Length: 335
Image 1 (cartoon, helix red, strand yellow):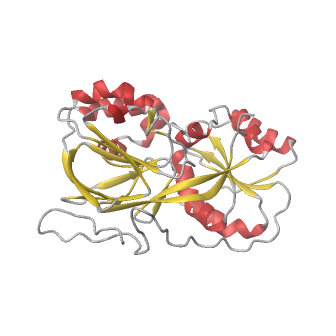
Image 2 (image 1 turned 90 degrees about the vertical axis):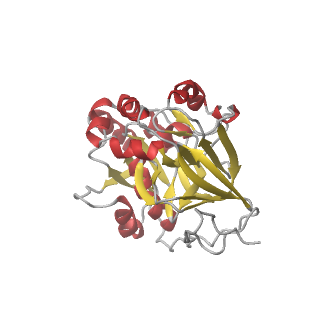
């Protein structure tokens, strides 16, 4: 049975943004693109891309690169020109025999590279230079660059899922409502200057202005009409510089974790905050939470969708899971 067309406001025709191959409740994904045949990679030769606007860099980055080279890894840095996109660089240089890409930056840098990582099949390593570094946290990679370099040098690969909304990929979470408005108001200069505190400052300023909106969530053949201030669809575990999608979530657990904050007043969010940080908010009666492989969200008017901290698409939004489709260097599992 095909996934039902997402419902919307009465009298409004809602376009269906997803491939026709999606089915529910058992999801049949459209075939992923085959990675091109690359020349045999030279042993331990890695393409380095560094976001020069990232908050943390300098001497610590140089020390991390020295660790990689000390393990016999040839690191080839590509200085990105203004406006040059990480995905474009990876696509253009993937055929040069690299065994992996190393990305120095935050979640936005990783998200920008995701399409090319999916298409080329190149594994990637993370040097966490961003503000929140949510994917790194979900993988157990701490903020210390030397330790992150050791993780890459050890060579343990972990296959990750990706989330997708209207054709845009995300590692961590995609959200509609409060967090999308927060992303609009949280300027890059504030993140660079204040770090995670910048999130808190911007959220506090926005909190008293937040208002519920009406949405229709289609999942598993059922349509739910909700009044909510935020709908989040998580692929990873951590997001937003300190929040948790779901306490047991992981970026390779084969599911999307969805929640809708259906509170009436902004001050209720303050009471919810400890559970939002722990990922236990699904126990609250004002929070609708479920796991799925796909779902759709429609709203009365188009609303922006925040994917890994950037506004990329608008509702109506079709979400789906791409299972075990990219590889990352991650700490080896405990024995």
